[in-house]
Structures are given as structure tokens and as C-alpha cells.
Amino acid sequence: MQNDNPFKIKRKAQIQTKECQLVGAYVPRPLAEQLALWAIYYQIPKADIIRTALTTALPADKGVAYMLSVLADKAHKGWKARNKAHTEKISSKQLAEHFTKYKKELRKTLQRRGLPDHLITEIIQGLNKKAGFD
Image (cartoon, rainbow, N blue to C red; front, side, top):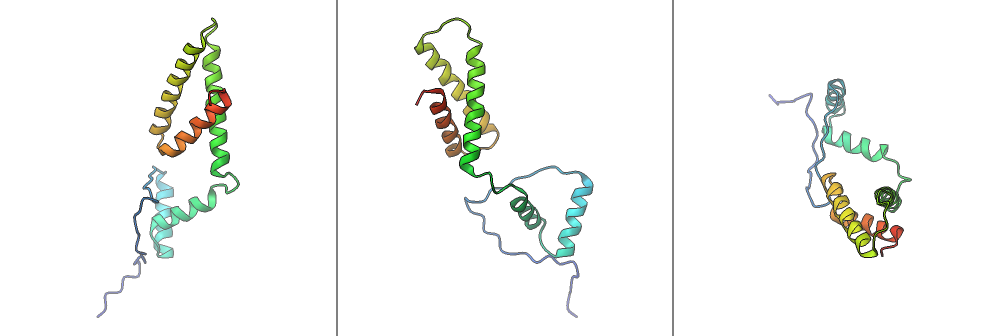
């Protein structure tokens, strides 16, 4: 007698490479239960459903270069707001020191958010250009 499991999930061999990264999220229980039902119904792993949902749901019109530019703009607005707080005139050397400190804080913030270093560097380079420190 053959052991046929009617709820068997057909798994593809997953190759974990540097191009892949595990991401996780807590979702409401009803959504988690529905995800489990979909996985059983379609006989595919939950990860495949999530991967497909993300790749189709994220807007394709927002390319990496566009998002980096927008984030550099946001960083520049943050710098201008912080710099405005210095009402007294400061020397260009002090201004450069403040700017360096701001960039270090920005880098730490982006690292905590899980952004890779090469993208952080691009955002900071964009900030340098917008702030006139390139």
C-alpha cells in the first residue's frame, strides 16, 4: 500500500545564495490561517506564495535609482532642518563636522533598518551632492 498524502506540498529545491535573504513578519492570525490553507490547496510552500505576492504587489514603476534619489532627498531635508537649528553663524569647518556627524547617524539608522552598505553609500552620496559637499 502506497503512502499517499493528499495534502503533500510539492517543494522545489531552494538554493540559498547571497542573492536571497530571509525576511519575516508577524501577520494577523486569520491571514496566517488563510496562507496555510492556500499552501495546502495549491500544494506549494507558504514561502512561494509570499514571494509571488511580494513580487506582484510591489510597484515596478519605482526603480532602485528612483527610490535612492527620494531617500537622498529625505536625508537632505533632515539635514536642512537640523542645520536650521543652528541660528548662530558657524564656520565652514564646524558645518562640515556637523554634516559628518549627521551622515554617521544616518548610516547607523539605515543599517538598523536592514539596508545593505552599498545602498546606504549611494544614499549618502546623493545627500552629499544635494547638500553641496561632494
